[in-house]
Structure formats: structure tokens, C-alpha cells
Image 1: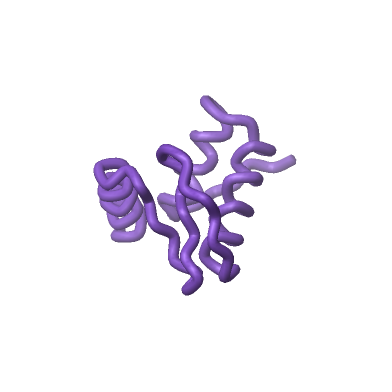
Image 2 (image 1 turned 90 degrees about the horizontal axis):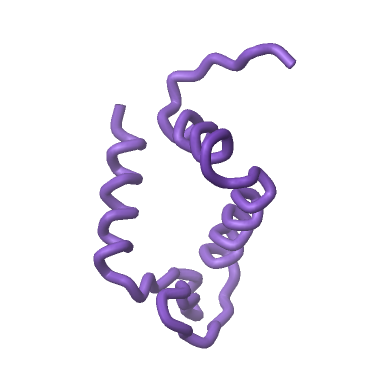
Length: 80
């Protein structure tokens, strides 16, 4: 397979994550979980720091510090 060139920070982040720390299959599972949480209207039981899905499809992140950090990192990756 040929090398891929990108300027997209999210692509670079995911590439580094899968190359150095997490199996690609696990990343795929997490992406599907995130898609399901945002797109489906289900309510799941809250357990520790597991996201809770509301009936509006929004995800409530129960660890506020981690949620804020995730939002900050997302903004940093989105802004070029």
C-alpha cells in the first residue's frame, strides 16, 4: 500500500493512536459506539464514567473534567 499524505489533524491523531497505542479494531468499535450514541435515541444505565445516552441522542459525559478536555482537544484538532 502506498503512503498517504494528509493535512487533517484528526486523521493524523487517529493514525498515531492506532499505530502506537490502540488496535484499529478497538478504535472502530469506539467510533461505532460514538455514532450510535449521537444518532440513536436510547437511554442507557449510568455506570461510573460510561457515557449516558439521552432520549435526544445527546451523550452526557459523566466525568466533567475528561469531557471538557475531550472538547478542548476536539477544538484544537478542528482548528487549523
